[in-house]
Every structure is written in structure tokens, then in C-alpha cells.
Length: 612
Image (tube, rainbow, N blue to C red):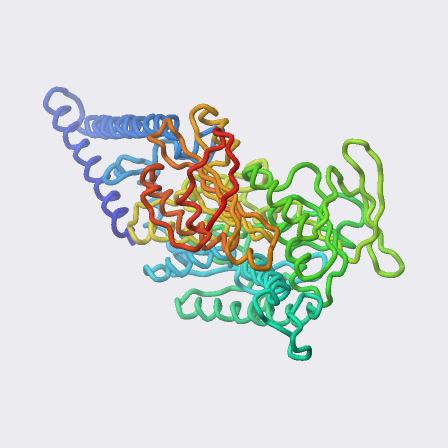
């Protein structure tokens, strides 16, 4: 069956153009040359094919040079700082120009001439894989999803839905919310609430306890409902769900291995399926350090939300947003928590904001062990974990016992057992898959989400990639995912939302003299009555080389995700500072601070705001 829509058009247009070239060459050759007819036919065919290939080369080279010029001159596009083997030899096909793209034409011919069991097979049942599979099925494709979960070293396992639903965004936000409720209870006495058992005595934090087991059970019940909902959703979308591990046998053939411990199938434990197109969306898992006792006596973020009993005194090793988020809600729930940091917290984020987050965590009870790395973990007779660690500067060694040790030192992609070599898919040094607009080095295989090289490890990015990829393949869409200004939020006790450039990156890119930083320290109205110490912060970074365009957004305060999401649209629109300042704020809110910034860092004036 010939591909539909734009690809069918490009397929037939390529054939028509090549036929026209052949006819013209044949007429010219028979008119002006003499010789055997078969020789003239062969000569005409060779000339037409040669002319067609030369045209393809000129067409592709033109767009390739144009793309590189755009990448060189537009800071909003991702710069090509390294060779990407997934990038096409020529520019991506555009409009009717696809007819001049020989690899695309070959792809269409091969697609039309081979029968496959499925139009699409998605390896990985996380957020990105599910969005791609359901959208492709909605557009008429026959789709199957392969999903399985290896148990962690601690023994934790989960169902369909991927990291976000089971051991990431969803439980993390709920535990964070539980910690916030604790703060509200502590401060409720200032708002007039009192204990019924003690009339006249304001309600305060010392009169309540948190029950870890109840929180875990309620959250896990909600997650199980989501797991069941995803299976029902696939069934409703007519997507076949296969609970098995997938690996490549060849570029179009996948081995479904149901011998994995979490797979639930009946019958043949290994089957083979074929697919016209394949999407890899297997995500990643937390890393362990290579030190004695790490895997045996510690956990990761994959395990913390399923602990059967309270974690007690906890050591969190790492400085990533995952480490700080876990440490933040553990402290908020009442558990003594320490964070071991080798260098700086939140590397890659705005340094000013990162240090403010750390200071706030210290003020709210989290302790930091700076400039140190763990050397070993031992199990003590009483069940505690004895951690030996070293200061990276002085080389002095220390020991301390903890009830729980949690590693949050980074994640690694699950590409090792996919047998990508058999499919012709190349990976980068970090073991992630090279992609160009989700396409890998194999033209019919795609990768998205955390498993793709240099793609933000964020659930909404994977969802958007899967949705838009399916629309491009089966819905004739031309839209690509814009990864330049992806909004994100860190759910630390003092929440942090950001879009675009950090202060350091803006200075390095445009020069300190060409940017202006507008900022403000403020206290939310709801913090004033209980005299909460946390000070919030707002910052905008403006590029004066580009019509005072706002290129950086940073917000520290309550409901950071809700505040940041709305302003992300302004970044897509490319608003200038003057246009930004036309927005009328909503009073009294924290979000209005982002449209009320007037003081610059360059002025040296105190950014602390006074008044309402």
C-alpha cells in the first residue's frame, strides 16, 4: 500500500519527474545521436538518473547551508556544536521538495513493498510512548506498545505509565504537598485556628504527627488507579498492550521477551513482531555510585515512595533537582535529613536562584554536607547504615550512621539491552540515542524523551514529542517540538520556576554589557501573618541586542509551576520588555511580581520590595 497524504504525493511526484527526465533524454538522444535503440534507452536512463541525483544534491545542499546559517545567527535555535549522525545528509524534506529527496523516496518505496504486522511499535510505556501510540492509533495506524519494568535492587516494581506516574512527578508532587500541609498546620494558629481539646490555645505544629504509612498507601492507591486507567485507555484506543521486554532482531523486527520477572503473559514466552515504524521511549533509571555497599544498603528515587516504613534519619547523596526535592519533602514531613554535595547544587540552573534555594532549605531544617563524596556503606547490627565519606578538598574522612541512604546522582538510559546495533541505531557517549527531530540514524526508527541525546528529561517534553511525531507521520503535520525555551519547575520547599537563559549563560552568550537583569525580593502576603522567614525572588533577563527581548525568566516562590506555565506563552511569542510591561498584574498575587520588575542589578539598588 502506497503511503497516504504528503508522502504519497512526494512518492508519485518523484516518479513523474524521473519519468519526464527519461522521456526528454530519450527524445534528445534519438534525435541527435545514432546507435542501437537499446543503447540509447540505457544511455537515456542513466542520464535521467544522474540528472535527478544532481538535482537532489543541489536541493539538499541549499537547505543544509540555509539551516546552518540560521543556526549560526539565531540564538533561539539549538547550535550545532558537534556532529550529529542522525542529521540527514541533506536538509529535512520540505513540501513538494520531498520528491527530490532520494532517501525519502527510497523509504516510501520500501514502506509500500513490505507487509508488516504493525504500522507502529512503541518500545516503552511511559508518558512519551503512550502519547505517541494513542495519537497514531487515532490517526488510523495499527499500533502495539511493549512495556516492562525491571525491579530495583531494593525490589520496587510498578505498572504501566513510566517514571513520571509511578516513581517521579506524581508521587513527588504529592509528597511535596504533604510537607506543605505540615507547614500550613504549623502556621494555622496565626490565622485563628485552635485545638478543640484545648479551647483558647492556638493550633501549632507541635500538636500533630505525620503517619508515613498512611501517606504511602493513599498515594500508591492513586497510582494503581492511574496504571489501570492507562491500560483501559490503550484498549479504548485499540492499541495492543504487550507486557514484555523488547529488543531488536533487525531494523524492522522486534523480539518480545516475556521472561522478565515483571511480565504477565500466557503462552509463548518469546515472540517476534514486525513493524513499519518503531519508536524507542524506554526512558532511564537512577545510577548508583561504584562504592562498596551502595546497591546493597541504599535506595534511589525509584524506591523512596514505596518504603513500607518511615525513612527516619536520611542521607541524600546528590545535588540534582531530584536530590533537593526529596530532601525538601523529607524535612517537611519531620525526618532529619542531610544532603551530601560534591560541588554546587542544581548545576545548569541559574546560580543565584540555586543558592537561594539552598539557603532556604538550610533555614527550614535541611543540613548540607558540602564538598564531600561517599566512600562506602556498611550495615550495622541495629539496621542502620554506616556511611564513610571524604572531603574532596582536605581528604579528611568521616563516618555517620543513617536509617536510610538515598542516591540521586543522575540517571542512565535503558538502551543497553535493546540491541540497537542490529537496527542501525547509533548512540552517543552518554549511551543516549542520537536523534534529529526524533528520527534516529535508522530512518524508520525514532526515539523520544529521556532516552534521546540532549533532550530535556521532562515528562511534558516526551509527551509533546510523541504527540507531534505521530501527527507528522500519520497526520501530515509539519510542526516540530520547540526545545529552546522549555519551562520547568523544581519542587523544593521554596519552589523554583524558570524559562530560557540563566544569568551566567546569558552573560557568556551575549556579554554582560548587552543584557540587563531586572529583579526583586518579595514576601508573599500569606507569609506575613505567621512571619515566615522565606523570602521569594523574581528575575527577568533582557537582551538589548535583540530589541530588549526577554530571554530569561526566574521565579522563586509558592505555586511556581502555576506561575511559570502561563508566562511560557510569552516566551513563545518572543515578547520584548516593553510588551511585557504592558501586562496588568493581578493583586495581591505573587505572579504580579513578574510584571512589576523595575530595579536592575546594574543599579546596585536593594531588590527588597516594601509595601503591598
